[in-house]
Amino acid sequence: MYSKIKVLHIGMTPNFGGVETYVMNLYRKIDKRKVQFDFIDWYTDKNIAYTEEIKQFGGKIYKIQSRKKSPILNYSNLNKIIRQGNYQYVYYNVNSLSDVTGMKSVLNLPNTKLIVHAHNDHIELNKPITLIFHIFHKYFMKKNIIRLACSENAGKWMFGNNQFTVIPNAIDIDKYRFNTCIRLSYREKFTIGSKTVYGCVARFSPQKNHEFVIKVFSEIYRKDNNSLLLLIGDGQLKEKLQQQVEKLNLNDAVKFLGMRDDINHLLQAIDVMIAPSLFEGFGISVLEAQCAGVLCYVSDAFNDEVMQTPLIRKIPLSQSSKQWANQILVDQKNVKESKRKSHAVEIEQNGYSISSMVVKMEQIFANNVKNSQNTL
Image: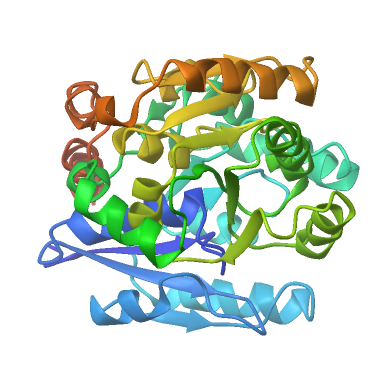
């Protein structure tokens, strides 16, 4: 009998995004006397997010060759770790099935179970090769694996008619609960004063539609120059977005804050979240913002699961940036800061607290290990 359940996570990136947030929320709260998490890192110039925290928890991080530099070495190194690691679970956190390196190895191991967790419900239009491989690899999803998804839409898109379990992208309720003292402290730290602060927490990729965020803010700023936009994240489009801000003469009104480990505090200072994603598996940053009492304006690409409070409004992507801005400004007239409060209670009652999610995952780990042992 195994003294501790060993889980190897694949899919963490250097970005502090939704996948990484989900995994670390689970890792922080899971009973580490019963479950051990280890991680694959195949990034050459950077480390996966939360590297130091993972090490503090006792997790191993296997640094292997990247797929881009050497697909063969990447494949052989990963398969060697899977075969020799005595893992009860190999846990793939994926946005698509474009790469299934290692999955076949897991299926051939009698005492190791494969978990595939869908974290998105679409592929960017400019990645046709990724889509082709995603469709081709779908046959893997019919195998005897554990299928998880962040939402119903993500599960249906990734697994088709195969059965799957929705695991809510839960958050640490207490961490994001509205706090007036932190709000005042952070607004002073960034010399915000009385400005209305707009924010977007997302990696700089086409999916997150930052160009549209900046266009919306430009319309807002034209009518209310006592406004500030905080862009929290990093990614491939950063330089292009900086050029857009400069072209619109918004350098003094837009701050690029990069990757941050204090997003929970920054949300206290933010008044309005703008998230016009082209597609979205779930959108955990919007859930965090609601918990902190932030008004959220999201595209119609967001699933209903993320709409946990009255603070969230959907606006169709078919509407122009000017229409988005007008809607936001009209609502702002009806909102007073004194009315701001946390919505942690509603979010917790709806099952989106970490404690609920961790219990569900611990049951999945324990039950499948037990079933595996019974077949030996």
